[in-house]
Length: 113
Length: 112
Image (cartoon, rainbow over all chains, first blue to last red; front, side, top):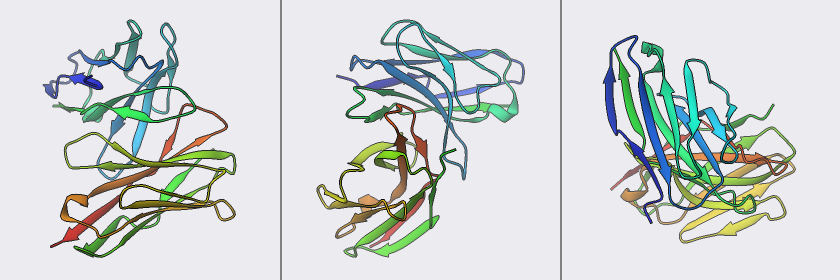
């Protein structure tokens, strides 16, 4: 049981390049999330998926797209990276609502030059 | 909307002391709360949770207190150890929502 896994762990992009951050969970959770974390700020929600086949915008969705490929996987895509997207990205998953315990991945540290 | 904040950005304690980290929330409909610990370079880790029908919940060396009247919760860490050094976040869920609101975090520094 690996929990929530993310790839890659580190990435450096040039402005305008594209990339996809991968996330997978093996806990059979319905809900999955993408957050970004910037110095001095809390976690900010980019997109979330309440269940397979559905996605919704969070607090800071501009410049990102997501795909809920199946119940296990939830990817985040940057179509044209900008320096403002330099951040640490965390994927999370949530099980039954009665528990509401979000499990976080180890994070992807992205730098856009 | 919901806002969740932490009173102190940094808390420094001596090893063996008890630590108290505070959190205020604004939405009276918040009914579930979680404390997370985030060590440098790692993802947030669940510590303890509490529902609004409780005032206190204890775990191993940690206690969470909830005061619904003033919309405040705290995390108490007993006999703080150097390994407790991390950033601590509170998160609030409202009305059965599966989207939490996170505070910015308090950095706990434990001096040996």
